[in-house]
Every structure is written in C-alpha cells, then in structure tokens.
Amino acid sequence: MVADDETLARLMALAQKGDKSAYRKLLGECEIWLKRYYSRKTGPDTLDDLVQETLMSLHRKRASWDAARPFLPWLAAIARYRWIDHLRKAYRNKETELNEELVADPSTPSITAKIGLEQLMKLIPERQALAIRLVKIEGLSIVEASRRSGQSESLVKVNIHRGIKRMAAAIEG
Amino acid sequence: MADRLHLDALAEELTPFRPLSPRLAYAVTALYLLAGGVFVILTLGVRSQYDAGLTDPMFIIRTAILLGLGVASLGAVTAMARPGVGAPPRGWRWALGAALLIPAAALIAALAGLTPAASEIFPRDGKECLAYSVGIGLVLGGVLTVWLRGGAPVSPERAGIVIGLASGSFGALAYSMHCPHNELVYVGLWYTLAIAITTLLGRLIVPRFVRW
Image (cartoon, rainbow over all chains, first blue to last red; front, side):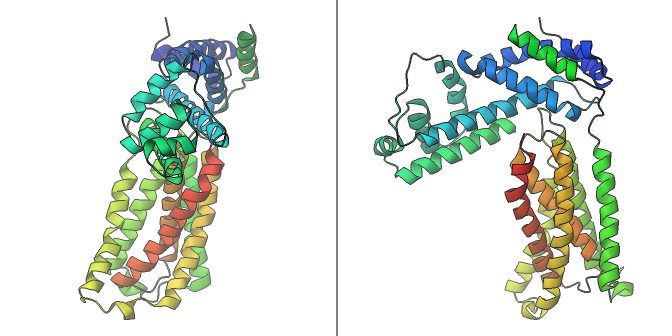
C-alpha cells in the first residue's frame, strides 16, 4: 500500500532538515507510486527508466516543493513532466530515422504505451492524430505516411510536430 | 539490488535544504524596479509633465496596468517554480487582456479618426522608450530566469512568456518615470511594442535555460 499524502509530506519535511532515513523512506514510497502512475501510461520497456529519471528529478528539484501544499500533486507534476519529456525524446529519435524504413513490431511491449497515446490523440485534430498514428505508431516513413494520408510530406511533419505539442500542452494543463 | 543502491546513494547525498522562496523573487524584482526607476530619472530626468502627469488619467491607467501585468506575471513565474497538478495560474492572462485594451482602443481611435494618430507617434521618443524599457526588462528577465532555474517549471515555453511579460512590464514601468507622453496612440504603440519584444524574446530564449 502506498503511503498517503500526509505521510509523504511529513517525510519530505524531515528530509528538508537533512533526515537521510526519512528521505530514503520517501524515495522508496515515491518509487512505488511512480511505478503505478507510469504503468497506466507506458510499457514495461520504458517504465523503469521513467521511474529512475523521475526519482533523479525529484532529488535535483527537491527545493521546489512547497511545504504549505500537498506532496502528491507536486510529485505528479514532476512525473508528468518527465513523461512528456520522454515522449518528446521518443519523437525526436523517430525524426532522425525518418528516412529509414520503420516497421512497427506489434509484439513489442510498447503496445501498452500506445493506449495512453491513443487517449491523448482524442484531444487533437484528426489530421494531426492521423500523422502521429501513421509515423509514431505504425512506423511508416514520412513518404509513406504522406501517400497514405494524402497530406504533403512537409504537412505530415508539421502535423506531427503540432500534434505532439498540443498533447504536451493538454498534459501540462 | 542496483535500484536499491541507487536510492540509498541519493539519500546519502542529502543535506538540509531550503525550499525555493518566492519572496526572494519578489524582493529582487522590487529592488530592481526601484533601481531601474532611479537609473531612468538619473539619465533622462523626471517626467517633464510630472506635476500634471501625476493626476493625468492616462498616467494613472498606464501605471496601474503595467503594475498589474507585471505583478500577475511575476506571480505566475513564482507559481511555476513550484509545480503541482491542478489549475495553473491564470491571473496573468486577465491582466494581459486588460493591458491589450490600450492598444486596441488606440487602434480603434486612430482608425475612426478620433485622434491625430500620425502626430502622436513621436518616433524619436518612442525609440528611447523601447531602448530603455526593453534594456531594463532584459536584465530583469535574466535575473528571473536564473531564479527560475532553481525551480521546476513544467511548461518552459509558458515560463518564457510570463518572464517576458513581467520583465517588459516592469521595464516599461521604470521608463514611465521619465516618459513625457500621455497620448493614447503613443502609449498603445510603444509600450505595447516594448512588452511584445521582451515577451517574444522570453518565449524564444528562456525555455532552453529552464528545461530540466
């Protein structure tokens, strides 16, 4: 069972005073919470990396927690930021490979990550969702996506860029 | 096991730390605004219409709007430094909407021929207004960016916009200690342009420095 907000806030308040044992306990609780949080958003292939990165961010940005506010919304905001950053990096990596033939492997665990992505794509215009779906999920090249969607190659790139940006904005609130 | 060791190592690094203080950002901005105003007065002099200007409606409206936009934007900067899921600060949007009434009114008045627009532009003074407002604003923007780097803004682009708005508003407010003009078109054009420039620069430059 994950500790409640009050307990986490108390541990963090002790950590502010330099209590290493309280901080270690807090990190452990946050790790459990983050695993749950990301398991609904991403696949097991990236879950551990995201949890690690977020814990590192929590550590580096610990001074940004306001003791007058609840702890979990702060942790959730950091987790969301790392997730968006992860999506951006994944998109950039794809972009560098755009000239190559990309074929999605439906058997990979990242299938689960697509569920979260599909939910997000309901928030953006269809033409942007289509471009992202074809290139990001189905793994088509820009040329193929252009042929399939009827959009020009540059429009496919623009729609992917804008779509990712909109999704990020939607997540960031 | 590696995971456990990793968390142990993080905990071992811990030393007592102070939470990020928004008061510091407010205090530094207030001091800087004061210094900016003194700098403007020392280099350019006090408003030539100062006696009348203190009670001039445009001077009062302009000061209130610049102060309102600056404070609301600075509030958004400090809120962004300490993230949390929930409603993000929106006060700066309302303040910006109010501030845009000035250029909108100036445009309408000019288009409707209600005011002699061409004779109210004063390009030489306007360029001085831009140089001082943007120059003072950019230094403040740099200071706020350095402060925000200690926080955890989850929307670097929006952080750049609000830093640009705050620094431009306070830069223009400092310059307005000298500004001899109260004409609607002048204020609507040059003050808006100064804030627009710092906001654009903030949007373009700040995100790369506050990403984490």
